Structure formats: structure tokens, C-alpha cells
Length: 93
Image 1 (cartoon, rainbow, N blue to C red):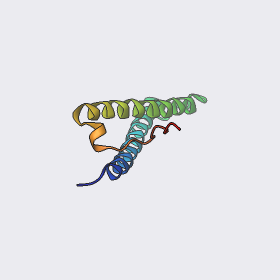
Image 2: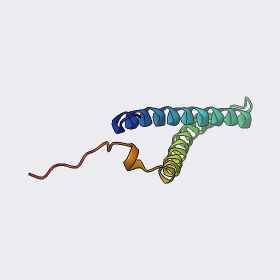
Image 3: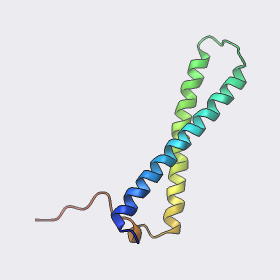
């Protein structure tokens, strides 16, 4: 069985990969949908604005999905039992 620190490191690495893949998937989907909507038309700068909006929505959407996944995971497993806290409280002198 792995210790808490190893579990924490593996969780952070897995969560980072999950978050990056989610951003990439949402960004790719958004760019495809934007290109289908525009279909070769030059809306005069509207395309770059739409791509910026797609980027913001992809980042926001991935944050939302990540937050929901961690919330779901924390209901299924006891976080304190398996993971070490990232920030430890200060010891009083």
C-alpha cells in the first residue's frame, strides 16, 4: 500500500493531466464549432473575437468540470484517510 504523500503526488499529477486534456478537448471542440459556424466567411475580426471567447469558455468549462469531478470524488472516498494535506498548519510557539 502506498503512503499518503505518494497518493497526494499521484492525485495531483493525474488531476493535472485530466485538467489539461479537458481544456484541450473543449478548445478543439470550440474551434471546430466556430469554424463550422463561420464556414470560410471573413466576419472582419469577429473570428479572432470568437476564438478568444472559445478559449475563455474552454478554460472556464474545464475548471467547472474539474471542480465537479473533485467534488464527486471527495464524496466517494475519505480524503483525509488517503491524502496528505498540501499546506500544513503552523505550529504555535
